Image (cartoon, rainbow, N blue to C red; front, top):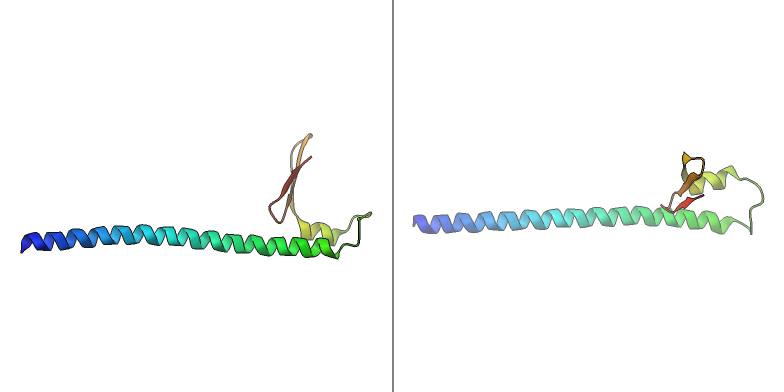
Length: 92
């Protein structure tokens, strides 16, 4: 009887470990999905802003700028990076 109890405890422990690993993997995938959804929304906004433009832009437009650019990083005189809200980065 004691042997059977140990066997049941072992199986339960093994099942719990497997279940915890599966739950962690599920949580990770769910987080990735949410991240991709957020990026998709950023891309949609980025595309909508660009579609509103009528040809080339010849003057600075603060609204367009702020809707497209997340930040500008100046690391050095010859290393300036424009990081767009969709994650795209341009180094100039």
